[in-house]
Image (cartoon, rainbow, N blue to C red):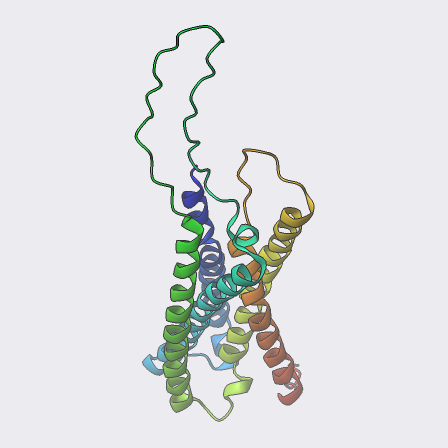
Length: 245
């Protein structure tokens, strides 16, 4: 596979991981809330379904924000530690033709110099610029999308919103999504970066950079910690539910 194709495949790692986790977790959350609707007060009215949508859309906005943050981090890491560590080795350049050696006292045919080929541009520079543009675009759009749905959630919030199963499920789903993404991506990214620096490269071989694994793991880490802090705060502030006889 060409280097540019490998880099393009790695750019979808974080998006794929977060999307799969969010879809599976969101489906599980809806099933649990539906089974517990009589005890927790969850209803299937238009207002209740609208609240579910606002929470799921808020999580989608955070995921888009995380993708943009990963792009910004990839740009900064490549600028600080070099393109090789983040995007892998450079595409091999064509070797210029060299006239063959002519034996002494022998007539050799004239060497025809082939048409010079232009140097292949470094695709990693284009990838670095794309990460910057993608990062800024996704961060702005994700922040606006999350902010709009957060405001809409506040307008429909109940007095006991933090004690509701929907709010607790939203926090647990966000904690699980970004926690699993951190565990799946951050160790692999650190391993790839250290391997690139410590292990000597073989000649004429392409080495995969840390790329999306490292930047994706670093982007998911603070969001995981933020959701985990919100869960702990909710546990401290929510009064315990009375025991059922």
